[in-house]
Length: 76
Image (tube, rainbow, N blue to C red; front, side):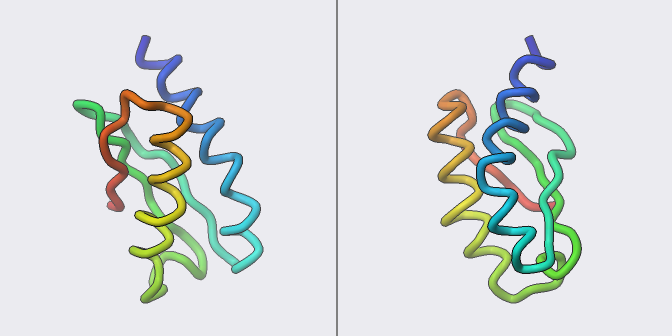
């Protein structure tokens, strides 16, 4: 079941990834624990001051829409 959940999260990330990559960054799913997806922002997004807004306003919204059992997305 965990592998299927991770695949669904990756699929959701694939929907938003082109926008992040257009700004010179990317996002990777690191792990899922207790209905929380932990991601790492890399490239230009890794140290960007706006990465938290991107995470909560974009990435988390898309992941929670596509994978409703995920309650939060947190950045590592």
